[in-house]
Length: 168
Image 1 (tube, rainbow, N blue to C red):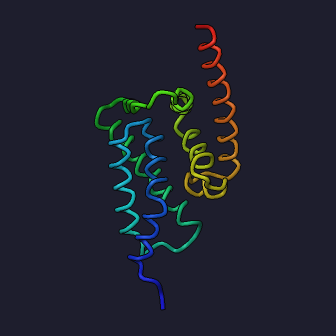
Image 2 (cartoon, rainbow, N blue to C red; image 1 turned 180 degrees about the vertical axis):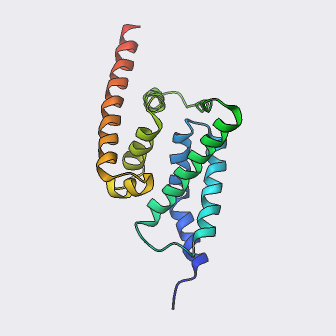
Image 3 (cartoon, one colour; image 1 turned 90 degrees about the horizontal axis):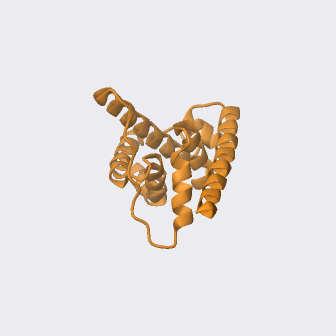
């Protein structure tokens, strides 16, 4: 007997909703309201497509692919409506003592969109390079290169930030 698709989807949501939201918050550069809207759209789209999912790749990678496409569509639509680049999200308020996290988020925000997405999928969400390549729709070598470049750029940005703090 086949498992009930609704039960399977419920489990998928319970297992991955927080990670999908966290991924989208970072892609939206801290704009939590936008990320929550996109997460909702992601799971609605996944629910509608649940019977068509063929099981190629991991369900986690499938969900992150939907989330990434929703985010890209949102940016594209906003660019078309305004004729300009999408405005940056505002960083949420942080508790005292997490300056390192703020510095890290600021450095992530300075990466280009493709590099940030690749780095977040692999570094923060734990996808394999192969899964990230599937999500991003790019060759495996390109994803590896993007993560390498993003890691290098993050090191530079964080070192610059540390030097600037020490100079003050």
